[in-house]
Length: 129
Image (cartoon, rainbow, N blue to C red):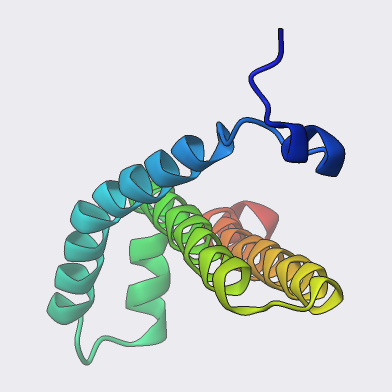
């Protein structure tokens, strides 16, 4: 016995179980972002006026690099989830909706990858020399 409605079966739609995962993802990523953002903004405020070498040496610490990677991943995951909801709710043309979702997902993945790679480059820069 299926829990899907007749219209849902015709359209191939599920039982709306994905909404709960999406909701939890937004809430958990926002909870993770609170301490990470406070730590990051506080750290940057303390280093106001510091030069490139000082900041690069700070990022080269394994704990700092790990926290920065967590921050980057959480920011772009949370961003994607939020923009996805906006696109799904306000873009009514199916082709534009799919294109928008793909563009946002690709953009978030590429930007997150660029951020993580930047942190890793600074973390391992002395070993490469």
